[in-house]
Amino acid sequence: MRIAIYPGSFDPITNGHLDVIQRAAKLFDRVIVAVAENEKKNPLFSLNERRDLVAHSVKGFRHVEADTFSGLLVRYVESRSGGAIIRGLRAVSDFEFEFQLALMNRRLDERIETIFMMPKDIYTFISSRIVKEIARLGGDVSAFVPAEVKIALDRKFAILGSE
Image (cartoon, rainbow, N blue to C red; front, side):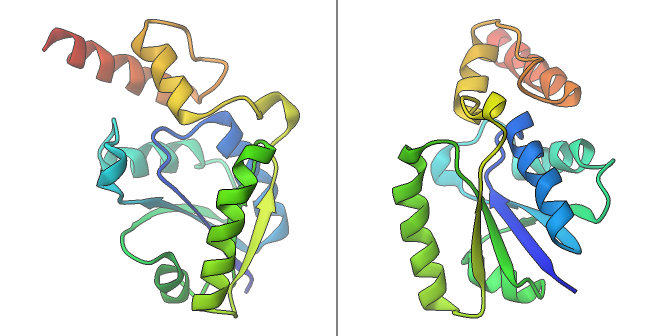
């Protein structure tokens, strides 16, 4: 079975992420969207909230599941019997960092391949950071994220705004 891991913070998951997931699901027998625990990024949503938003967003995709992980990615990939890591590239600016990560992961475990995938051009400008900023300022993000994520963003910023 060909298993791919698509890791990320997914804070929150966007339509660009979903595009990559949907296309990866056509290439692999199973895709695991692995939500990373990385408190250094100071996420808006908790690890469990992010996993739940991912799980809800991919529920209609065949052979795709959501999970969480912490620690070294290659160890997680090994623990899930994965053979590939999926990484999304939106622009050339993403490439240098992603290339360094791919080379390091290869050095740590040469059996695991990194596959770079680009979202459709209509999603290349979308990032979780920009989506959060638009939502925080009261803008409409419904074109950039699944409906459940928009609701979660609105709810989160309403709570933060009332504090």
